[in-house]
Structures are given as structure tokens and as C-alpha cells.
Amino acid sequence: MARLSEHFNEKEFLCRCCGAGKGLIHPHLVIGLEMLRDLVKRPITVNCGYRCPKHNAEVGGVPNSYHVQGYAADIHVSGLSPYELAGQAARVPLFFNGGIGIYPERGFVHVDIGKKRRWRG
Image (tube, rainbow, N blue to C red; front, side, top):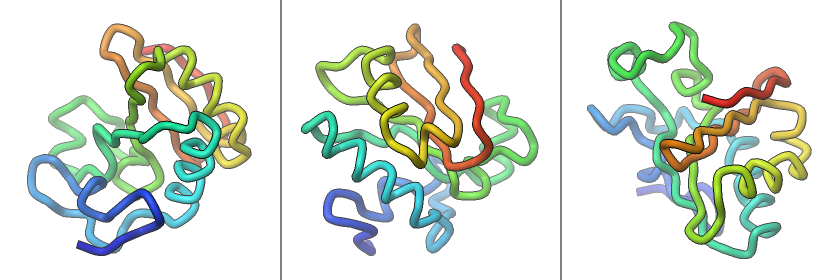
């Protein structure tokens, strides 16, 4: 599977239901994740990257979700709370100017390179 950067490969981002998404992950998303990894000095696990429209609908995503466009990832870092991780993500310009959603009960943070917004799920 193609390496997208030093620490991320394409397989990590493919749709969990069907494996779609090859070639659809935006390079700026990966650059932002590399910058975040440099800040936290720990590996980042991608729980969800690209979602095909079917899978997106099944998980309750909005029809034109940034996941469907290859602009978003749901992530976690071992040893950091979602609040700590979101705080570090806000230090990355690509995510500061994009979306950051905190899902404390589910243990992950959503980051994207879309328009600027913040929320707690």
C-alpha cells in the first residue's frame, strides 16, 4: 500500500466497510497529521479516514462529509485524552483553520482541513 508520508500509509485511511478511498486522501490532511505527530511526539492512530457514501450514511455522517471528500480523520493517541489531543491539534495551522471535534465518551478527536468549526460530540 502506498506511503503517504513518513508515518502514514494509505491503508490507514481507507473506508472500513469496503476499502474505498485509494488516491482520495488530501495531502494537506496528511501534512497536518505529521505536524500533530511532531507536536505530541507519539504515534497517531487513524480510527476513520475516508468513508464511502454508504458507510458515511450508516454511521450518521452528513451527506457531504469531509470524510467522503478525503479531508478528515478521526484519530486517537495513546496516553492523551481527547481534550489534550484536540488542544494539540489546535496548534496545527491546517487544523486550527479547519474542523476539530472532540468525542470524549468515544475516545477520539475529529480533525479536518475544511472550514473552521469546533464541536463536542
